[in-house]
Length: 118
Image 1 (tube, rainbow, N blue to C red):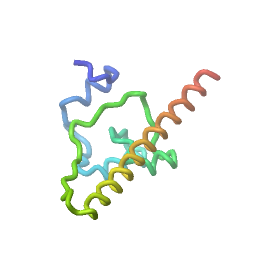
Image 2 (cartoon, rainbow, N blue to C red):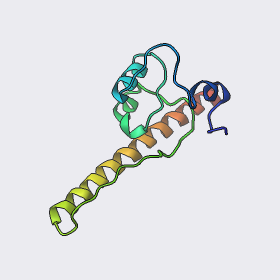
Image 3 (tube, rainbow, N blue to C red):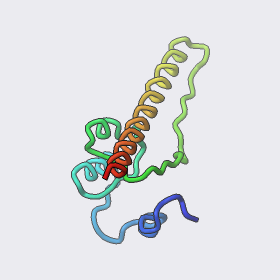
């Protein structure tokens, strides 16, 4: 199974945990480590949008995967406040996800333009 990753990354990442080195069990620590030059982070663009905006994190590949786990909201539909909260939360999350993907696509276009101009 290829998982859509280049062979060198697939060989060392899929289904295995590192035998040595730091084990970062928190997403925030993982992202901070990548921002500070300690490797790469596989992450959702929506979670690292601020770092993408500042170009502290940059995409390596034009490879995207749909998360296997999603968040859901169960709300009391009888309550208008619940409905309004769910609508607000959906809008914020959607905007953040789309904004993160837009930043990645812009950066990839910029990189491709640089390669084509070389």
